[in-house]
Amino acid sequence: MSTQIYYKDRLGFDPREDVIDSAPRSAHKAKLHEGSPFKEDSPPKRLKDQHGGYEDALTQFKDERDAIQKKTFTKWVNKHLSKAGKRIHDLFEDLRDGRNLLTLLEVLSGENLPREKGKMRFHMLQNAQMALDFLRYKKIKLVNIRAEDIVDGNPKLTLGLIWTIILHFQHVLISNSDGNIYLLSGHTQSVE
Image 1 (tube, rainbow, N blue to C red):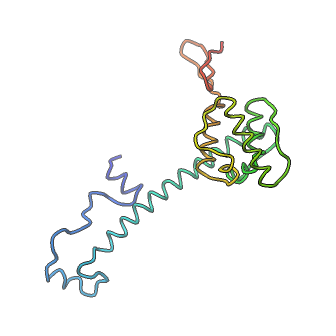
Image 2 (image 1 turned 30 degrees about the vertical axis):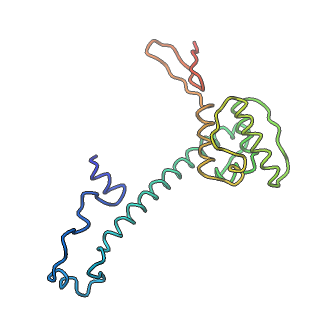
Image 3 (image 1 turned 180 degrees about the horizontal axis):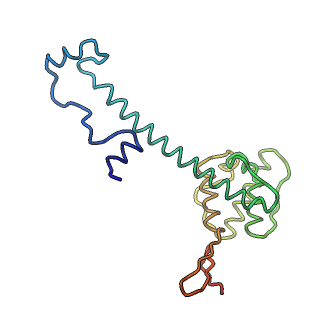
């Protein structure tokens, strides 16, 4: 796919298109634009639409990417939570109280984690902090993620946290042409 087609299809504009006529307008051109909504010295409306189109398309592209990540991560979390008889519907909302996050970490690690049973913000913060502390204890690097971010349902940081958990706990079996099977997780190990 050429860059020109990419911009046209994905972003809604063609950067090579001549948008502004840099030559001064003549009286003849001014007469052509009589009755036009443009004043003589204002840029064409098309320019404003294209810049808005680019920004709108870029925002839409980012929103689509975030929606795909949310859907994919929700499916991954549900795959593991189903082992504990639980399920989430909205990744950002259903992880806010910290309980589902702790359950996910219990399923992935095989360890039991303590949790607060209340429903107040304080209890939610305690549960989310317990999950983050557990991840740090496991030497999983968390950058700029606080319990408040999870409890507040911050989309970017919640997606980042789940991605970090996926990278650490996802196990992948790979077989080589030599017949050996390798288990890939946080560290590569050979399983024979």
